Picture 1 (spheres, rainbow, N blue to C red):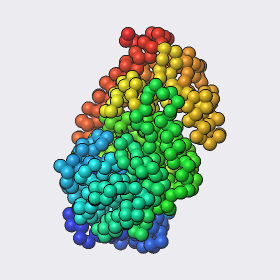
Picture 2 (cartoon, rainbow, N blue to C red; picture 1 turned 135 degrees about the horizontal axis):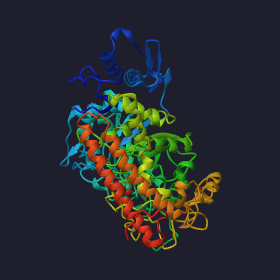
Picture 3 (tube, helix red, strand yellow; picture 1 turned 60 degrees about the vertical axis):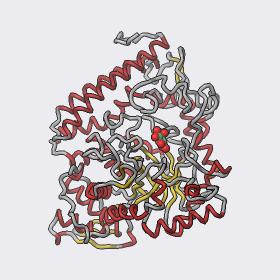
Length: 604
Ligand code: GCU
């Protein structure tokens, strides 16, 4: 079996009868690596997920022991610095799978679902255990197994399919990983109630009974995840109720069992008229949730996407994350490379998360969640190097101050037997991959030039006259959206210092310039370069770098099957980058009529 960064570790045993809990597994992992007597494991339940390592003793809570052992193993095998003690910043470190029970994966780029096929549970227990082991090795502790867009038969996960859910939970349990399920807000209707109104006593009683049945079968379920009133999903708005009413309904049902209700804040009008220049989709989440701050039960976590739109290559931090002082929050990022190359183009995310975590107030952040990049492909991730994103997300949701360079270096050392020079070369390309992708697919904060629906490849007008609220409004003279008070007013959702910085094009970082401003093509950027010229230059440079990256990556001695997978993808990325270059440059050249100052080929 393909084992990613655990490839140098021994196979898991086939028989798990003696490995029921994380501390059992901690002892087993250690015994495979070190003579049993050289390290002692001491359980100190109060430490929870945390651990201490001193001399030859690892002290930790039930799960802390396992994380402590993995810290030790990553140190020995991957050269990671060994902490004397450590505990995670966020109690919940979650993977959100968008798997459907028919076996498809929404925005999945690594094959079909690891859990489902043909409307049924269908999985290989050995692969599930290996996935759980990968999660434990980097401190991840919750996996939501089904798509946030819940359709039949997935509603049944908290009804007639509970025994099967329980069997899957048994596989994850020894690894300290708890299951979560996405549920449908209108579920009471399916079960024969006339309404799903959160203030209706029968609906409340129904959710309480349901939670009881769920926890009878899976006593350690982490909780429910909900997408409501978003992109066609049902929600409390149907009954004229607020999202606090909706979230609290479910939270109260889960509370007696210690369950958490994770409520997503991805709510906006997805039927906008492009002619309407006043409505700004970016404002929607703040407008919906900020007034509700303080009204949620204490077991509610609001899960907010990192940016105000939808996982674009670069967005400013969502203002909602900066403004909910009395509510627990989860940061949501996307490992699935929906808009960022679909696990064909190389895109290493740790540098992005560093930026996000740096700007994020930490006080009421209690969880980090990532939309999964997993699938049934042999290597789990499609692109062999995309595994580093899963790995890095684990390390950084444990410790958001963790260095991106160290996370990538550690992953390379665990995964490949490269010389120091080869490893450095790979690390350099991985760490610069985001900027390379950004150069050809969306620089200066310009988003939404991507092909609609598939979200792969360039199509600058694709979303321009559509109903999704995602416009760049490029014209003959100017491009971008004015989001200052003179425009849509989005900027006023930020705390004053940040708003001041973004408001002035002179102080707004160039890489967000066209997100916040509408500017003429002649506008001089910080280095004096006219905006239109930068658009051309970046696309030429991005395509050149993608070609160079292909040459250098394919010269590295990756073992098979990685070598072939990487070479195929790097070649496709080179073609993509050229295509982006030509389509976008031609688009702007036709609109503006401005020639490239360096006379390079732009098609008419
Ligand atoms: C994006 C994505 C959808 C997904 C949605 C979400 O819009 O394209 O596939 O359902 O995000 O986060 O809920």
